[in-house]
Image 1 (cartoon, rainbow, N blue to C red):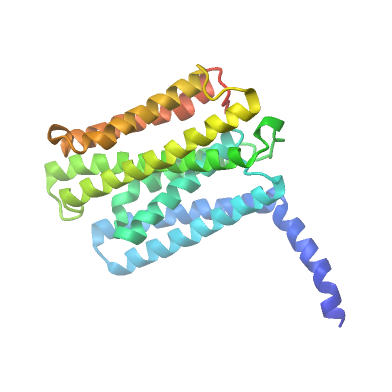
Image 2: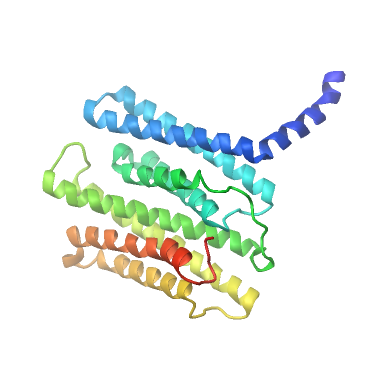
Amino acid sequence: MLIFAALPRFGSILIKMMESPAFQSVILKFAFAGYIGATGLYLAHAVGRKPLWLKAAFRIFLIAFGLQTLCLALRWYSAGFLPVTNLFSTQFFFSWALALTYLYFEIRYRIHATGLFVVFLTLLLLGSALPRDPALPPLIPSLDTPLFTWHIIFSFTGYALFAMAFSLGVLYLVQKKLQSDLLPPLATLRKLNEEAIFLGFCLFTLCLILGSIWAHIAWGYYFSWNIKSVWSSIVWLFYAGMCHAKFIRRWQGTGYAWLSIAGFFVVLFTYLGIGLLMQSNHPLE
């Protein structure tokens, strides 16, 4: 009976411990180490071709993604809202969305090290976020709506799919030149690239729709000529054109790969360039 009576107290202590920034920081560092380990094993498999390394790499990646997901859930629970309101939290969430994107393509197509660029980008974003202050800033009233949450989710998962398309575009160009058996055939790379672009475009479209409704509720207008809104529209128009370009013969293959590469630089400028270097209604600092 005493054990059962102590359970609520123990559970309360455990929850407080898991909510502490120090505990979450440890989880995040273990996740980062896991991503590094998985990347190293994927590279080792590319050289040594040992199936055991491939299995180990994927399992370690799953553990790392699980730890990062746990950290995200704890931060979300502690804040009471999706904590994506400053540079640390956007880098953290973007890296999580990139890992999720890689996981989707790995489970569906067994791309293995083909998605290494996305894993590298996950490491870069997470590694650059770790030294920053992970404090949860208060949410301003205009953001306190489910529309904000879904706007952010669709935005960064769309960005992550565009990053995957960038990776596949680069690999298409490399494979066309080298014809290596380490990489999938050109037809497969083209198919995966087109799927990444289409899924990213659909999610980014939902992001803009929800963002417009949210803006109308918060500020009374659906669209403004704010620099962030303008460049988000440019991103949407660019990838809408890409969804059309895959049906045009001269843009298929090599041309589509180059468009995928160019598009991701537009995405990076929209995400980081505007948020850090310019005044907008989506500041990162």
